[in-house]
Image 1 (cartoon, each protein chain N blue to C red):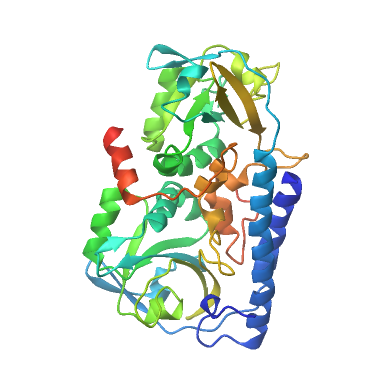
Image 2 (cartoon, chains in turn purple, cyan):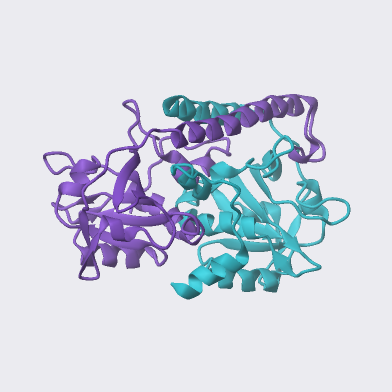
Amino acid sequence: MADSSLLMPGTDEAYRAARDRLRDAEIDLRDRIEAVAAMRRSLPPGPVVPDYTFTEHGNRVHLAELFEGDKSELIVYHLMYWADDDEFCPMCSLWLDGLNGIAPHVTQRANFVVATRAPFDKLQTWATHRGWNRLRLLSDDGPAFARDIDAEDADGRPDSTVAVFTKDGDQVRHFYTAHPMLDDRERGIDLLCPVWHLFDLTPSGRGDWYGTN
Amino acid sequence: MEIDLRDRIEAVAAMRRDLPPGPVLPEYTFIENGAPVRLSELFAAGKPHLILYHLMYWVQDDSFCPSCSMWIDGFNGIAPHVRQRANFVIASRAPFDRLQEWAAHREWHRLRFISDDGPAFARDIAAEDAEGNPDSTIVVFEKEGDCVRHVYTAHPILEHRGQGIDLLTPVYALLDLTPAGRGDWDTSNEAFDVWMQAR
């Protein structure tokens, strides 16, 4: 049954029928998003991880200290930085442009930080340039954390990474990791960025467009 | 399952791109900084598509929807990217000065805001019912010569429950990565204000 709230005055039968089929597919997609989230919540506990350290405004901060109040979950976005070019990833930065906006909401339920291999002052300069004034920013203290979450390979090449940790008493456990590359192609973390889903509403779609700094 | 989900998101987008043309629309008008603006004037040269988010406003309470505002908190951040490919505006039934005040309060400096000129537009996109109750709406238009056509509409309620436009905010997708998930949490304008004051 067509939902008239999705149609405008003057809509013809061909559009109505196609929109009806699309609506069924959208309902199915919404339900699958929730089903995948339920599978994720059912993951068994990950390993207890070392108490990695980070630098924040010249101070050393431990992973376990990133859990504030009674919030037992921590989402870390690891921002790619190329030391050779002294450059931050344009696509990571596009993701963070959106995540900066919604940080006041997400942090009502979970801890949320942005970490990177760049020195803290570089990170801060970049955040100011992009207008990121709602994010907690951390610089990794050495390569161990980035290597262990696969945000850096053995040759020092960065990859963007979202990793989730849980606090279990005095210990911190790994819960979940994702990267943009999923099964040998990209778009593995597109759900975290509205840019693609807005483009997906238009007739020309996302095409082969990429964000640039 | 994540691979399958990614592929289905793309398959649904492909179905959307295959929609037949929607109807040609009247020249709705809006108010922007005290001046009337027509729907067809919201298309920049070379950009035939317009994405419009309609922000719910309750006249009786003079208040804006907290959930719409959360969506727009994200849109504000990514507007410079979206506008490289498509026109993108926020419209509302609120008077332009109220809309501007709310935008300043939420720090929305990267978005274009317009106020509906009368109820016709909001009613035709189902952003307002016959009794004047608002609903949030995302709608896409296409410019074809001198005409503007309807392309697509979505609302949060999809088949009698919410989550119909969740893809357009990273909030739920981020919470979906955690063991506690999104639960029955809803944001509020007050919680946002508390957070910003504590920053």
